[in-house]
Length: 121
Image (tube, rainbow, N blue to C red; front, side, top):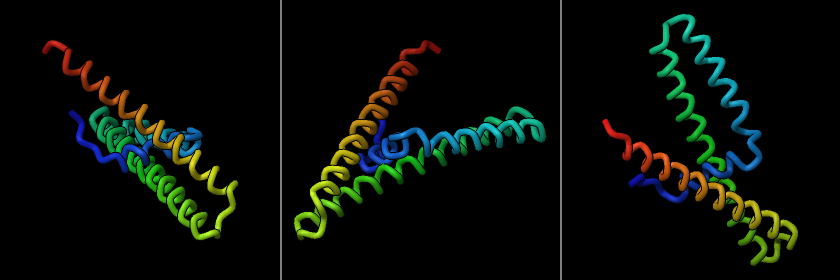
């Protein structure tokens, strides 16, 4: 089974909320991979794509964690009377969407892993 802390999974969702943060990273990855392929061949393309995907995933995870931390910060501000109800609702909904996305991504990853394990070698 995949051993990944929930914080990292939550971060993955935050990056995928609007698909905006990931699109530029994916476009850059494809450009880098195609440029490297012309210089060094297919092996370099595979290595670049793996590195870029890992970087995009790490950034996504970090954004999800930041979203959850922001929600906690706003909630604590509300308890202290420093945040409005609108800010609290917005941050809690963002955190909820982040967690839902992270769980969906985790489920897809587990499903893909199980399918790979079923493949006869």
